[in-house]
Image (cartoon, rainbow over all chains, first blue to last red; front, top):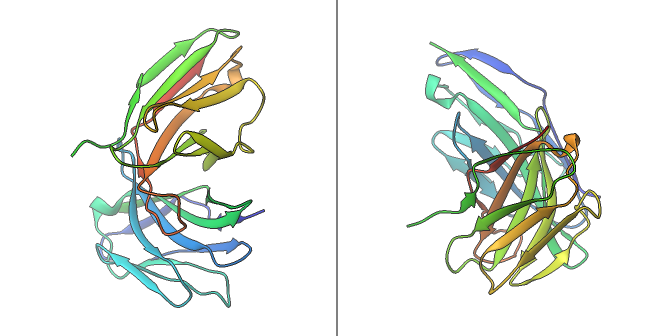
Length: 114
Length: 115
């Protein structure tokens, strides 16, 4: 079945540092790829998505590129802020049994220090 | 506008009791999803509804778990004879449709503790 693998956390950075959170996947066909974020005390919300190979999703300074050749969707941000501290989930939706079933990674906690 | 709402927000129950968790999706969203989030684990997909039907129930962990959706809106997840390992946060999400590109909108979750 489909699966998503994210780097283990927590990731601890100083403010203004460069961020990469790795995400790789296995899926049949051509899934859509997503990053969701869960800020402390809040529900999950979409951060960005990409629906086909070579698409780049971007939002709030975060970017991720759908790389079919390496089955990856790594999340990057050039300069993190304390307010980016949250748990980040990589996810895909692929066709399974006629339905587009979502599959999530385990989440990566990001802690940004001033 | 109103987002996805879930009730109760917290539930403490005794082992062996049945519990019902409720989800109110965003109005007009035809697709509804239930997940379980355990400490240190990712989101475990449980079940997905398109309208009132559930094309995929393969994620339900045992026959103690069931879910229904009526009127294409509210959904109830029922756990019978609860066990301590059922303790987790149960999340509901909805999306406008069921295609691969659809964004899911999540509720705040129900935190279930089985003593």
